[in-house]
Length: 240
Image (cartoon, rainbow, N blue to C red; front, top):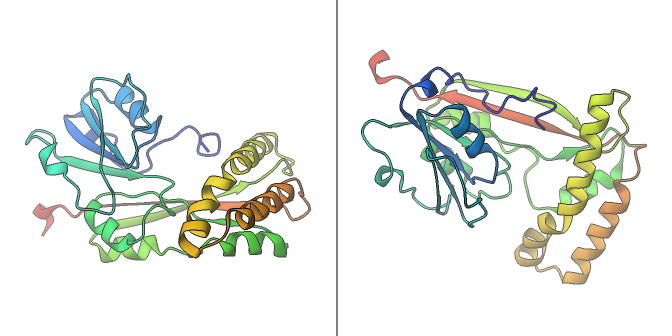
């Protein structure tokens, strides 16, 4: 993904603020983003929290990771000192992880980035695979962010290929990587919503996953997904 985005990991206009003592929250933090921001902005304290402890043992001194549930009330007030108020909240790959997205955006009221499901140019198989997972094709994050109180809400879109069907060398590399990621993660993505959520048997889930993986090798439909980044800012009270 960073290849397509030109290596940029922050879209919101907060980079100048991150040079001063401030706080950044990484919701559903993984193993890379929070650490990279901490290295790039040593005056910024990065608070990363996730439902599971999947972070590395060694992180920069200004990066702090803890366990928390994004669906519950956040405990950030206990972490932040008066000198380091939260100026930026980041979330990525959280579409399937959050049930109540308006509540989630209301809790952040800062800046949010999301990803959107897959599409293809002309095939019924991709529509079947994507529609089987109980997730809306349009999560409405931009509208919800405005309702939550954000100003200057901006959306950016990138078409991300799945597989090596693009003539462009850079996008071909991206597509091949994305195909590998989806193939390896297909069972994990499908298992909880289908087995636990809709009562599918393990055999039925595996059958769908096998069909999906086989379809990843068919480039005739030119499959892709639209990567969407959404960001905005909390109004300055002095402007009111």
